Image (cartoon, rainbow, N blue to C red; front, side, top):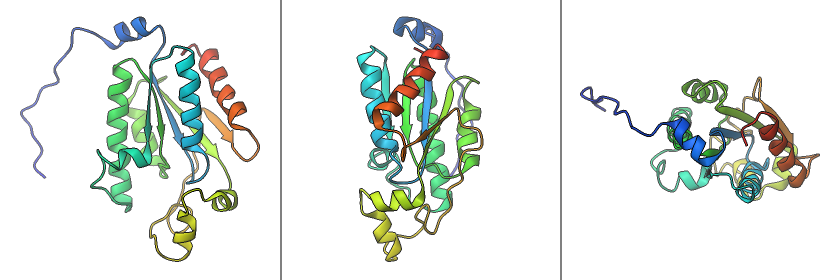
Length: 199
């Protein structure tokens, strides 16, 4: 692919700080990472509903939804997983610039890819949330039947079975979905956001 070189970043007259002031809250990315079945989508969706009730401007990016459109041409090889997260990182960065609290729910199995997204944002704009759940429990839940298919060899490169998941080294928040309810987990994150004065 030939990369365009005749491009210049166009500055806008309305700045990120202006949008944050209008919204009356900071913007940031809440990056939910964890195994399939750990509860990322359920938790991030419940959190967005709670934030919306608090009149917070949000947008929710979910792994499966994004693969229906923006990333529909990507598979699950290590290279495609890297590109998947790179694109989501760029979209998230735009949404932070728009003044939104952006919730992203992606397995995002590689530490390097998550660190790359973090590096594209300001220091306090990336909040990594490790949705912790054992492989045994995720496989027992198996809400989409994917673990069963992976065990039968019908799905290749499935995280936790024949592809790795690298646990976050220093996440801002750890949610243990085996021992915390959705309501408790949501309030843990809300407390963090209030304590750090995001909302």
